[in-house]
Image (tube, rainbow over all chains, first blue to last red; front, top):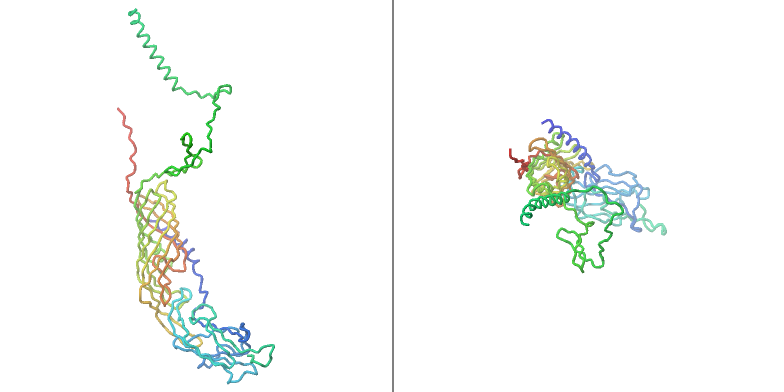
Length: 173
Length: 293
């Protein structure tokens, strides 16, 4: 019996050493977060936008900003609602007017989802519709309507940007 | 004359007997002396005209060179396939075992698995078809995470084969490698899920229950040893590398635990078995020297 117990103990120690190497941790997000990137409509390239603030419609506090310099933003959806709206406020001196604030309203369905042992359980969202204003935003593209916890840019926001060769033709946020 | 012949005949018989005995004796004698260099040696070689040789294979796969003119056959001894002898009979033994890996690991904090039993048929003590059946379950709340993962007791089955590298040694000690295919059908759910939207101050508590059964198939590569501890009883350790071959998918995600496989994020696991071996053949009875007393 002593032999068996020794063998069990030795095996368990070896196994613990092996299985201890298995956990890699959550390499993605622990929630499904829509990631939006900023692009120039004229050049179709990624841009960084100065002096902006982003907040949820209905919330007093800003989610980003004020005066942030951003090229990508997370726009988390409300899991208990079927729509979530964000506003973008341009805070540079020339553009800081309430009438220039842009709004994005996402309509979606949500699905409870178990991602993995490390990342846990969460909701996944499928965007069904998107409404937005076009003050400084030219257009918004949805790369993939399924929003998961993978750190991938699913939304492209195209801004009307000034063309350096034709100054004054377009607005530069 | 006939009288003389009668007198000589016993002498001739004795001489004949002596000559015969000497001849037989001479044939049995072996001379360990190397012939001297001056002796006549047969330097004639059997020449083989290789252009006349046709190559054939016999039933054992050996190359046979056939002289197409004379019909003589030569075995190509350099290309002979060595025959492996099997010491043990085809139906050698049956071994049954209890894998107590998971119960043992539970003592060290593992939150899943129950155990399994298996049976193995030893063919020539070399090839060993194996069948395993077990029950797996999980009830785990990983620390620092937002859920409790549960799967009730569910059966799993594995079928495969081991190859004993020490097949011509005593079966008491074995070093083997093997392969398995495992299959299971089970239900799972995730309870006490807390989803927090920090910016929106929304907190929701949900349960994820796919409802229907999931299934999964996987393979394992096994390497292990078996050691006799006394009588028909042995202990066995094995390391197992495994990978999922197929599994059912649901809109709710995939199970983090698969009965018989363990957690999906682990590529290596193990087994530890207590086993009982039942020989199918009586050991050879030693020959008894029967002599007149």
